[in-house]
Amino acid sequence: MGLLKISGGTIYDPINGLDGVVGDVWIRDGRVIEPPRDPGIVPDRVLDARGLVVMPGGIDIHAHIAGPKVNAARKMRPEDHRQAPPVVRGRWHRSGAGGSVPSTFATGYLYAGLGYTTAFDAAVPPLGARHAHEEFHDTPVIDKGFFVLMGNNHYVLQQIARGEYNRLRDFAAWLLGAAKGYAIKLVNPGGVEAWKAVRAGNVTRLDDPVPAFGVTPRQIVQQLARVTMDLQLPHPVHIHCNNLGLPGNWRTTLETMQALAGLRAHLTHIQFHSYGGSLVDLAGGPQAPEAREPFCSRVAELADFVNTHPEITVDVGQVLFGETTSMTGDGPLGYYLHRITGRKWFNADTELEEGCAIVPITYRPSSSIHALQWAIGLEWFLLVKNPWQICMSTDHPNGGAFLAYPQIVHLLMDRDYRRACLAKVHAKVKERCLLADLEREYSLFEIAIITRAAPARILGLKDKGHLGPGASGDVTVYSPSADRTAMFSFPRYVIKAGEIMLDNGEPVTELFGRTLYVQPQFDEAALKDIRRWFEEYYTIQFANYPVDERYLDAGGRRPPA
Ligand SMILES: [Zn+2]
Image (cartoon, rainbow, N blue to C red; front, top):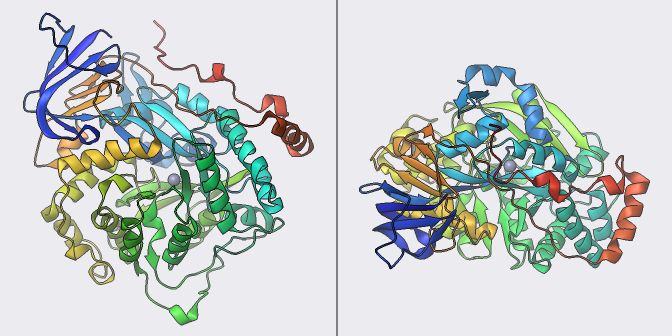
């Protein structure tokens, strides 16, 4: 701790309007402060950043890094760990497993190694909250939080079916606080419950009724979007739309955006939801013979909607070529992937709450489908005009591991590199999307927006994603290079809460970040019915369900001496 001065760097801080301005960043006791006016004030430590690029620490708005599903994937894929070099870091010289689903310990250091200091797990069933927090306790460096799955929760569906909006709102508030989660997440709203209720079931249209409840995905989206507004949650409802990955799903995505009717929402891994082609159901047959078209991009239509609706934000879920692990709360999707790839498959249903599925996947540049998925992600980055509406993500590890972020930066900043990559993938890509015609190149300022400032703003994290006074002292210092992959893969310094964590890739201190969560207010009278519900249907006692604050107390934890 103490007083740190990062001196003479070239600063990219979009929230404060700094686009490559040479200056100093001062951090006292973990927070950025105004540069002292008194020249007699001497910092405890000075980092010479002359000629280097200074940005706030990176923020991952959507990844899968903790909880029962991630851990199941680790157990399911020993071959994935064996292929990857072990991650050995820190004074402990403790080893972690790498690969597409790194162990907790490795996850923290691998993020820090890229200059990322905050990450959110996007899909935790409330019953798995304790497990996710325990994994967070063992994930060093980064601040982290998770989103709570609600789009298939029986109590939620029941309140929507009965028109009990206030009870729905109070339950959502209570559930967020009970899980110590950060935001409301919908995964294939209604579809996972249909999968659990009916053999190979799903919902495929926004007005399909969910078995036994009769509510529709449209109602679930609309009601929970309204709940996030009424509870004044920092992050709007985080939506994984219906029909992920299916040809023709762009219509569902567009209808979902339209259904929001002006309410704020974040649509996640939008790449996976932007496909033209004949819509298939999970049994494999085309549903709309009148609309037969080959698998293709429909980003242009969807990006047009985003470009005219500032209340909608997205992250991309970029696909990168290679071996990875798909893991999702979308049970029927996992089954579909298993059927079309023939790879091993894991499914779990979480009582009254959610489901999940895991299937290994290999994205190949020689596959026209995979190459189009890669191109469609890049189209999103290049067609959304306002970078404040879009965040970098791979939906780690679904489109690829977060370790690919430097490569995505390179693809966005360097048109020639992008063209060279496009020339190596399946030739059909050029016919079925616009990527070959897109000239745009991102600037460092725009990269700082989509990896830091925009995710901070969309998540409602006021002290993150910038370097103004009061910001958390999370800073990444890069050595500039025309080879953007190299530049962003290996920061010169990574500073977390004012402490130098990594110096030239070498860890110089050990620390653990905070867990970020919300505790919204609700009407206590709602607890009576929630308690009754637990006593009637749950395998866990109501009193034992909520995670209490002592469980989170990993902030600032240090290794045993
Ligand atoms: Zn995801």
